[in-house]
Figure 1 (cartoon, rainbow, N blue to C red):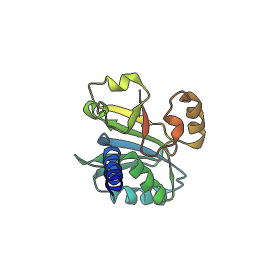
Figure 2 (figure 1 turned 30 degrees about the vertical axis):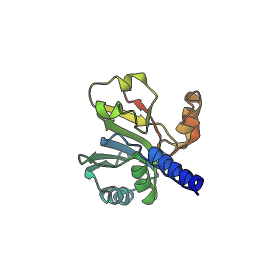
Figure 3 (figure 1 turned 135 degrees about the vertical axis):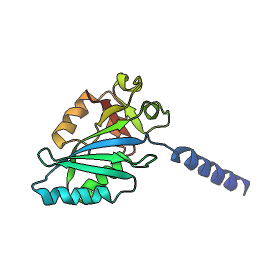
Length: 168
């Protein structure tokens, strides 16, 4: 009986230890969607993004199929949540760039994996691009797989890790 209780306690401890990964808080995001053909398409994405808790403002550029999203302070929005909203509208992300603060980039427990050394040394808000599957076009992702082949976590395809690099 003691052995079963010990196993249960250790299992719960492991779940609690692994389950608390905090994300850097996004301040702004630029989403370039693929597959849009008209303003009704952009309205579908706008509707999904506006329905998210933590979104303060959205502006759209129909010429580039871009959505500029500003977030409320202390939001809990993740890149995956943005991806899910765009996909729920029936489209895909061709590019996702987000603005993060220097403090958020330096968090040890963050789910952001920095592919560019200059990002972690930043002292100002930094615009970064997410390089994971689902956040790039299929063609660009194939190219990035070769580029980041030496990054062990890139090949894992973990939806809770976000590989980022500074946008110049």
